[in-house]
Image (cartoon, rainbow, N blue to C red; front, side, top):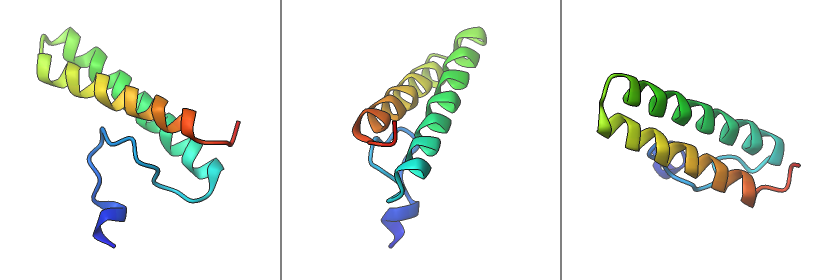
Length: 69
């Protein structure tokens, strides 16, 4: 069961069976990614900015796959 909790932050794989929990988690992933992207841009850290962009995109993809809303 290590795969259930050992996913990279930029993974677009679902993390919850409950669609509301999945939606909430994906939203959090998007917010976290957007913050990393902004901070990376502000401090001129391309790696952080790219990581944030990937996390944000993965969260959006998880939300598209989810049927909560």
